[in-house]
Length: 327
Ligand SMILES: [Fe+2]
Ligand SMILES: [Fe+2]
Image 1 (tube, protein in one colour):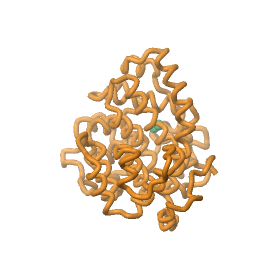
Image 2: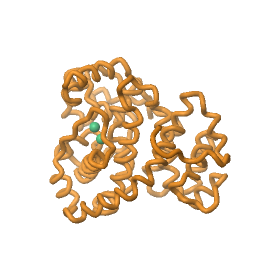
Image 3: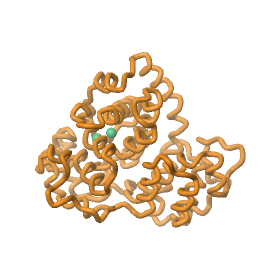
Image 4: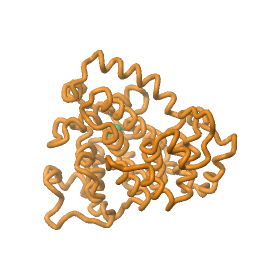
């Protein structure tokens, strides 16, 4: 998957709308960045509708450390289990394998794209929290609107800032230049355009190279301009709306000013203003409960990169609980 490159004729018709200048600084990004086997296998599972618990067990059996982290997170306060779980089978039984699939993939992504040692002055954790919150909100939007499939919305939300995550974690010198322009007063969009580093396009190019389904490719490419999505207008609108709500609720992308047409997304998803108000009320109750789980997911994914992977094996220790707050 990760070794695949675009066809000689170039990217598909989606890419024909892309001015090559917007990403001229990273021409071979698809070859430079790949997903680890387990993470890709988990993503593939999530994208299929007919997977079963045994499929998740099979994939995770190849990565005992990741399995230990999944079990550890299953015992976080968010799931409020009466009895702590100590095996994957038990966790699947009480939490559900789809939820655990998503958790494992989030762990895998945060392990692959370490944002814990990003350039000074940039809030790497904030970027992960933004991605996880948009994922959570996009799923809620899908459930409320019934306009898109909830698990697809969840993945689109998780991946929509893929380009920015890659830039921050894998291309620190280019990202540093970007930050200098932003710190000098330029918008993120203008700075990215000036440097040929548009994060929406970079994310799309990766998604294309990784052969992710078209719905995710469009969601990533058009999350800042959902009206232009050629095929998956509803999913792109759901991602854009989730993006707006995440910013409003306190999970913005560091440095990014959001200018998305709220009315367009509401209309496309057939969400009324009272429904939106109820949704926000609901999110305000649910998100504080999910926040510690997101932190734990992010930090335990990145623990590998800080040489603390063995810490995951301590999942049965009673003090290995969720830490309140972000520091
Ligand atoms: Fe973005
Ligand atoms: Fe975003």
